[in-house]
Length: 596
Figure 1: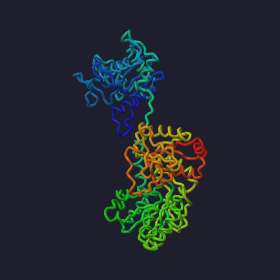
Figure 2 (figure 1 turned 60 degrees about the horizontal axis):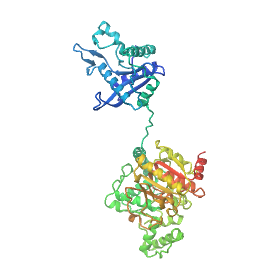
Figure 3 (figure 1 turned 90 degrees about the vertical axis):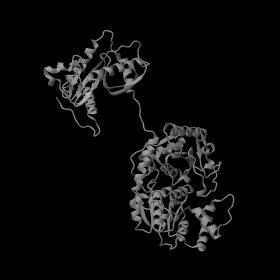
Figure 4 (figure 1 turned 180 degrees about the vertical axis):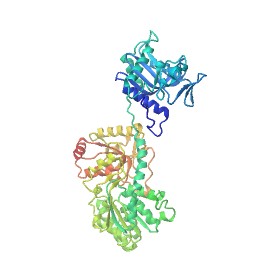
């Protein structure tokens, strides 16, 4: 007899190992018309139909002409003592293997008769057997009869009848068991193909089990945190450089590294400015500083007391207003504000203010450096106590320059590149790289994630309906929580149908920095109200740059927008776990062309 393997999995029990091997030998020996169903479970009624009970069978064999055979599998050495008790090694079997097989057989037959599609007065041939794969009946010699009068040796599949080297013996043993039960009662009939199909639908109905996006988010978030901590080697390198530009594509951890560098500088006693372009990002950074979130690799975690007070977080334009107002150099604010106010007036007011207030920071960390004009960065450098000497770090991604060309490389800072994407799941990273225009290519550290979804819809009502369906599915079917989703538009919220609509069934879009018409309220970052727990953030791709969410829904992208590829690059890369694009057929066609 060929010996059966004892090792399959570290956590596999002897019983599970035996069941696996029996199923393997049966499937190898029996032709396709014999259906083998492993380890089946059901919830059925008791014999008196007054209660319910769990039912199970180690193996069920079904054949349209021969019937159903329920097999109970027991591992190890099997014995029956002088008191009629059955044993598997030192473990007593109560009920006995044959009794258990019989109970399972009758319970299964009752369950099948209760099925709605079962034929009337259905009495299929049904029997039971036992499998002892670790013993050989021949070892009992003439004492086999001592197993008891209620035991038929022809209904025992021992190691010899399950010999891997002799599948014909296994086939003969199965057919012999079926023949014995077919002769038990004249009123039993073959189940026919309909009966086998009924059993198959009950036991083996194909069900596509998938993970909920919520569970993917939870596991993905843990991996994001771990991978981000792998970037701490960059911080070690920066300790040897006072002035550096850190270049990295989307997802390479620039913002987290900028925050951590500011924390460490503050912990070392430097009065530190952490400055960025977008107000939502400044709000997030300020909250992180106040919260004292753990540092990467251990560093300056906790930033309690004076250390936290040594970090000033601001957008560039808010910094200009605050210092110019303090120095009395801020001109009257016109209404409506022209673009020149942001591009020229505020930076000029800052330069004039510096002449009065002088340098006040001992270290400056800039995030989103690609969005800064050259003279803005020059002005920031002048805010240092010792300009051109004190620590000055600029984190940037040329591919995200949505407002103006990236000029950071003109500052003469020591360059350092980030080339590992630790944010995006692999399918998102692959799509992002298609729009990077060859700049700062990165390798994905994460290997998880599902494919991005592209949903085509015409502008207006069709897009609104597509958004409603997507948000309902994410929230109700996938279990994603509102604060894990952001809906980002290709243009401003003032021109957004999605923002004007805002109510999508039970889901509501929210943004605390704009009014109902989508116009900015002008609130400072620390005055913006907190997002309600039951609302989904809606913002433009431009304003959300530097931020991220587990799930991003992109919409209202225009095919004729000269920045469309960069908007796609920025928008898609905001998603840590999953991205859905609700776009026009023209944009969808462009996505296909980029990928070809």
